[in-house]
Image 1 (tube, rainbow, N blue to C red):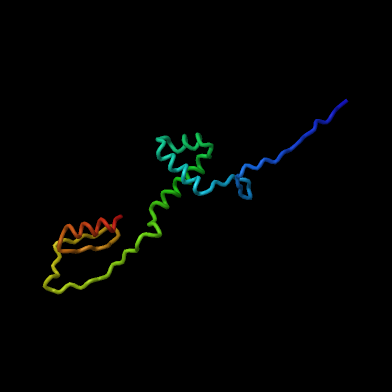
Image 2: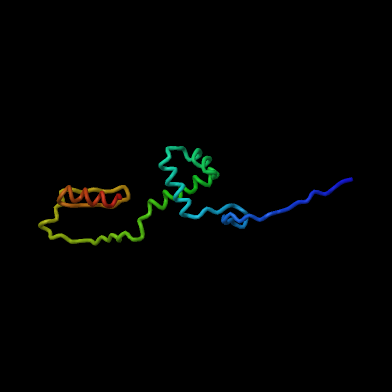
Length: 123
């Protein structure tokens, strides 16, 4: 005599959200926490991802995105605007002239001021 075992199923709500393919979606704040924790950990990305149960390619992508966001100026930062200024002929002999890699030319009479402008442009 063959008996059929009873199969029961239970839906457990874990609070996780998934995309239409079924991949687990990690909220941005949690991704930022994990990237910050990795930076403090001293572990490689692969070791950290393994420890946290995240696929390495996914974690590496989060780190890359964090780096790109870090390069952008914050939205609240004031915009810097430059204007061309004409200097009277008697004062038009610049002591210092610097051409940056992108072709920007900075001229000035005082080396410290020119250096400060170059530092500001590079940051």
